[in-house]
Length: 184
Image (cartoon, rainbow, N blue to C red; front, top):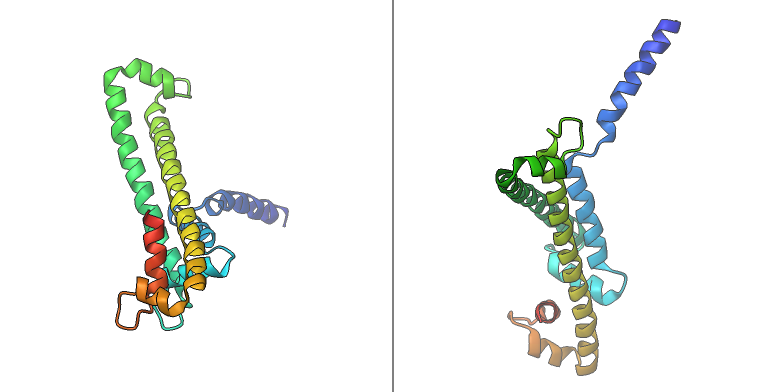
């Protein structure tokens, strides 16, 4: 009985580290959901702009799922590009002076982990820069949505639809206004 308990505890301890680590895809999805929540915002104007941008069905209730799906693919591409570019940068830096490279990035006794440490540091910095740019774009869209809602209220729905709408029924006016405002 005692042996069985010890064996069970040992197996549990061995299983925990493998399940506790998040896979890159899971992290990308989590980051994407956070970005979508930030973009959707709390005000009705930002929620309306969010639904107009991502919603594809008649009532646009699928907007959040579509946003997360789109952004998680984007997050994965950004992470992969950052790793590829980081590997190239580290390789060229290592070719210039291998000893200085090992001294700068290596952390173990023989400094043989320098390349991996360099790649992870460079990739992390590149990904952080892209995340910051994404946050700025989100804030620009939210600001544009608020401005468009104010403009629509001031000029009336009909005039607003005539000014910004491009399809037959002019129902895309709000989305087009937000898109123009976010770009400028």
